[in-house]
Amino acid sequence: EAQVTQNPRYLITVTGKKLTVTCSQNMNHEYMSWYRQDPGLGLRQIYYSMNVEVTDKGDVPEGYKVSRKEKRNFPLILESPSPNQTSLYFCASSRGLAGITDTQYFGPGTRLTVL
Amino acid sequence: QKEVEQDPGPLSVPEGAIVSLNCTYSNSAFQYFMWYRQYSRKGPELLMYTYSSGNKEDGRFTAQVDKSSKYISLFIRDSQPSDSATYLCAKGAQKLVFGQGTRLTINP
Image (cartoon, rainbow over all chains, first blue to last red; front, side, top):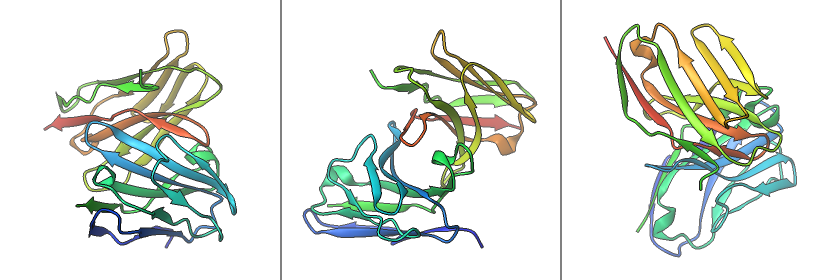
């Protein structure tokens, strides 16, 4: 089954404790992206990757890091989480440009709370 | 000013009505315009995309881009309760910018 998986699905942590949210896709997609979704602000892109070792900043990259060492994986790293990073996070992938030429598949979401 | 502005609603209409959802955007460099639908507790799914001005139709859905006024619209004909969701407009290519999303409810 074609899918994007994220782990963990729910996480409560404390300020400053480094964490990683994993994202994996099994569709051999080139494009992968991370978003955060907050009430009243909609969906905002954090980072995206056009292929292995190719990453670029989205709209709100501050406080986040990503890596793309393998095509299937695109982890999101919060080196020193802060309460303003409490949000719902989505990972997505597509074969073409951001789902334009091909459907962008979204993961189930990770709800992160930083105390 | 945000690059993409969207009225968050909520919008509630009776079944069968024509729904009009709108966004305005700034920074009109080369890009695509998209509409996503998001059901509660799910990730967004791409509905339609357009490039440049004009209309694009897919079943009951029509996407319209007016580059002169920097307006993006989505029309839903013969709306159904199953269309109840949050609709997000977006622009871009590799880098995407989304509107805030409009919560739509279709009442039976």
